[in-house]
Image (cartoon, rainbow, N blue to C red):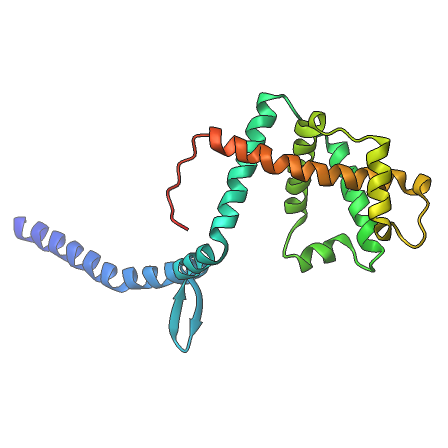
Length: 205
């Protein structure tokens, strides 16, 4: 009786080992196949190009710029929370509508224009949100007088079409001058935020 039990146990162990030997390699191969896009970026003449090597190459090419952009975005969102600055959906919708009208004048749809830039609507919405937050945070620092508007118009008439009339394009002039001054203010403002923030870098790019 004892020998029979021993034989059964040995038989079960052997069958488990056989199953492991047969099915484990299959399971590993199947897992590699299903996860191939996470491990490999491409195969060239039977040799793999790893996803890691692609990531490292991308980091070297534009990693620092991308990382700095993400840091700036985090700092901007932090300032928005501190100052209770919010962007309403209506503001985003209005901006998207304006962009759609602009690209349609070039014979494109918004989705086509985004595809050319390798972007999605979500990317665009994120950019609009950040832009609107910055505008609200820095608006009080920007002062534009009528003298400023006329001076900018005189120096940049070609930006407003053929023989533009100031009164008809005044809103466009104001918007462009505002964006120019905003860019100037932003550069100093974000540099100051970075200086004061506690930023720890874990990668060398």
